[in-house]
Amino acid sequence: MASKNIVPDPEKRQASEESAAETLPKVRIFGKVRDPEMSKTACLRVVVDNTPTGIFGNVPPRKPKNKDRRPREHLTEAEVTRLAVAAGKRGRHRHRDKTMIMMAFRHGLRAAELVNLKWEDFNLDEALMSVHRDKNGRNTEHPICGEELRDLRRLKRNQPEGSRFLFMSERGAPLTPRAFHVIVVAAGVLCQLSFPVHPHMLRHAAGYKLVTDQQPIREIQRYLGHRDVRSTEVYTEAAPGRFNEFFR
Image (cartoon, rainbow, N blue to C red):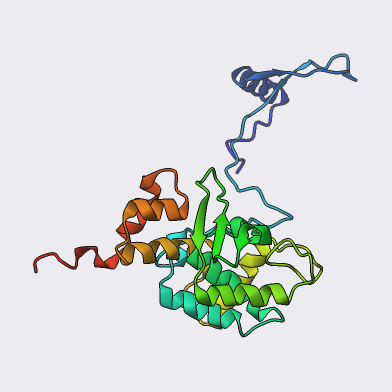
């Protein structure tokens, strides 16, 4: 039995095609037409394709949200210590890597701020360092604790004379933020933290610790270089001790 969609009569089929063409949008075709009897107006059917565009034949996976990968975006002081100890046990630059992690934590440094530190920013005799903030932050001067001062002097002794940057690669160039990211991730795997870590969590760890220690919010703002105090108040939301005196 012939299908109802098939029109056996050529004249009827041509008539049905002409009627269908009248309902479709007309798009002008520019250029030469080989057949003089061919019309320069084509009938096109618009079809919306919602299929994701593939890269080299494969559809790239969606990046998971931070809340799906880790329970929080900061580290505790104990977790930072574990991270630094792990960094001091791997690779050929153990002291350098450990010092980088502890400095990023103690001074709330972003990865780019950390790798751009220069010896000219430090006064080791007076135990002071100048912190130059990115993202239009406020530059500040931080004190250097005794343990950190010893680590810096050891780091300087191990470097070639005349080195400008604190943290150098084997080729004598300053490390990049990406290189520090690799160091932190590898240390997190080695110390077996229950969630993946990234360098900016060390800056959040500094704000979290200062709020937990009940330091004045305005002083924390200046220490971290925030222009807007609302950026600092975010850390108060994660502080566990802010309700300790309730219903006592």
